[in-house]
Structures are given as C-alpha cells and as structure tokens.
Length: 503
Image (cartoon, rainbow, N blue to C red):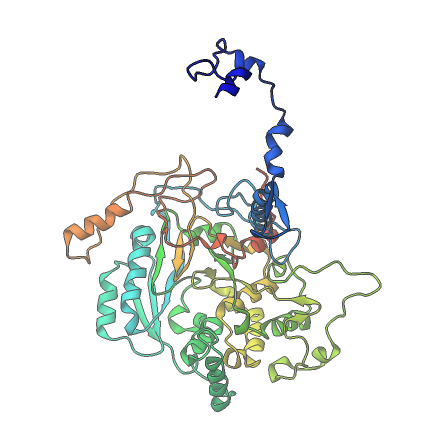
C-alpha cells in the first residue's frame, strides 16, 4: 500500500485519486474498428491439450456461412440449375403468375349469380358403402362452399351395390339430384386379354416390394377405371362436364361463381388445383409408352408436354441426341413388343414425375371421349402397366393432356382451397374483395348448438394478403401447403404457363 501511495495510485485512506468530471474519458484514446474486433483473432484450442487452434471469428462465422449455403441450395429447383423454386419477394402460393395462357377466373368474392342456366355437368364420386363417413364429409364441404347456391347433380358409382343406408344418408345431405350406378365387370377388373394369374402375381410382387397401394387389386382396377372408363358409364352419357369428388376431402374457400360456365366461357378443357410428383417406383415404364404414342402419331407439342419432361442439357453439335429407335416404329407397343431401352427415356427425354393430382379435376368429357384420347388409353392399357406396375389415372390424364393439349387449354384453380389426405393447396384471401358471408345451417346435424358452432367457424376467415385470390378462405394450419414442399410441380406449370409475372 505504501508503494502505491508513493506511485500516486492511492490517496491517504485508500481512496483513488479523483479526476475532474469527464477528464478520464477525454484523455482516454479512442479505439479503432480493427482494435475493437481484435478479440476475434484470439485463438481457441480445438481440445484442451491440442496444439491446433482456430481464431474465435472463424468459430462464430462458420455456422452462419453454412446456414446461408443451405438456404441458397433450398430455393434452387432440384432438376434445373437455373430455375428458382421459391421466387424472391413472396412465397409461391401468392406470387403472381403470367396471364399469357391462363388467369384466375374470379379474384375474391362475388354475390352468387344463380339466374343463368346451369352447365351440363355433374359431380362424380366413386365410393363404396364402407366409405359413407368420408362421403358425408366431402358432400358437406362442397355444399357449404359451393353447391348450396348452384345445385349441380351428383353421380355415385360403385363396383358393387349401394345399400339403402348409403343412398338415404347421401340424399339427406344435399337438395341436388342424386343418381347411383354400378360399375360392371366390363369396366372393372381384368380385361379378357389379360391372364389373371400373371396379373395377380404382378400385383403381389408390388405388395412384397412395398409399392404404395401396389398390392391392392382394387386400387389397380380403380386407376384403370378412372383412366379409360368412367366417362363411358351410362349415367354419364348425358353430361358434357364433370367435377370429381373423393371421399374425405375438404374445401376451404367459398366458390361464389360457376366454374363450369367459366371453363366454357374461357374455352378451357381441363382444370386442376394441385400438381405434384408421382412416386417413381409406381410408374417405371409409363413414359416409354406415352412418348412412343406421341412419336408414332407424329404429334408435335403445343407447349404443355414440356411440363412433364426433365429439362435437357444443351446438346453439342458433334454429338446430337439419338432419335427414337427404329424398332419402336416397326413394332406394336400394344402387343408388348417394345425393345428394352431406358425405361425412363424416350427421344432423349425423361419423365420428371409431374402430374395434375386428379382426385380433383374439372374437365370437358369430350376430351376423354375423343378418338385421340381413346387411342392413347388403348396403347397404355395394352402395355399391361395398370397391372404389372401401379399406374395411376393422374399421370395417365396428365401425359395425355401433355401430348394432346396446350397450356391455353388448362386452367389452374388457384382460388380453390382444397385438401385430400396430407396434401393441401389453400390460397390467401384477396384484399378488399371479401363480402359478408351468408350463414349455412345444414339440416342434418340434430344438435342446434353444434350446427351454429360449425357455421361460425367459417365466419372467422383468414386475413387477406397482397396478391391473394381466395374468397373467405380458412386454411388448415396443421400441414404446409403443397407449394412449399419439395414434391410440388408448381414451378413446372409456371414455366409452361408463361413464367412468373413481373412484380
């Protein structure tokens, strides 16, 4: 202590010397930025006794760099180095799309106009008696959000007989006309040119390989029926349009216009709301036949086929891509004589697995009834792929549309909120275009309190967002919309539809 006093460090009594107010800060030299960041250069040993050290700044910055790289890679489309899956500025669900070939029919809400004549269309539902609860869910949803105003008829089809309970219950949930029909053996099950033993063995192998639904014979029959027969059923002969409904689906937005009439007005043929990728193991050979059909019939793409084909790298002049083998042109694909070539490649093209998810579709039936589509279906059918593989009706419809239609023939029902199983598309509500909602107290729920609570749920719709197109949508929040998932094909649709619109 005496030594400190001698050096002037402390005053008598142990007190530090007092400086004039502000004197210490004034005399203290200012530190430069480099001096302030000097601590980042402090070495950190990797282990306590290690001779290797790393600067503290590297330790801090490395995780940040990794996160940035992950984000950059995430927003890039996996099959195209130059394509952005999630455009900057807005999530894809609300980003504007070019209106070169297609546009939303109605943005926001309208007062439903029921004065116009209805289109010649119907809802089509393929179901069995055991699916009654799921059918009720679907009817309640479409009635609440659309058909309470427009009263389009329903056609229910079954490969068996509907019982009275099913029929009576369904009729209680709608005031629209309802018809019930049976799908005969000529449209369901193995055709006479297929060896049932061989087909059953093929289906069993798919089950053993854990191909999704591959081991279910009825699922194969359903896919084939929706691919080439539903539009031939006697109950559908009088209709020009159909709207497909599945059991256990949900709609989230009010549809205050008639989509059938809008499809007619805009000269559209096929409408979808979700486009996703198929499981590769279910359709390993589907594209070789679809591409062969296009080649054999000298069909030139109208701009939609490219939605279903992986982008091709630039060809080098000295090594052009080989054309379709001559064996294809000399053979009959329907007789299973196609040579063993790359099952995913044809004319240098590869199937990207994209398809319109056909459990929702609104379509003109004369497209399916056309000779071109029938020829396409017959070629696909006689390949055996509906049995030896698990071809779904979604890729069949989509590849046929890709070969025979153009983007201008397709409509994206972006304003429809829709969910089936765990896949959902739900739009944002349109700003300044929402209208007061008319209550809908359906008559089938006996508990009055429950009926009122169920209806009030839809009064509290989601907050509108910029570029939103929906009408009084209230989206489920337990899952992410399909556009935010890796398997979405929205980017592929946008490419053929004209691209993303300028901000």
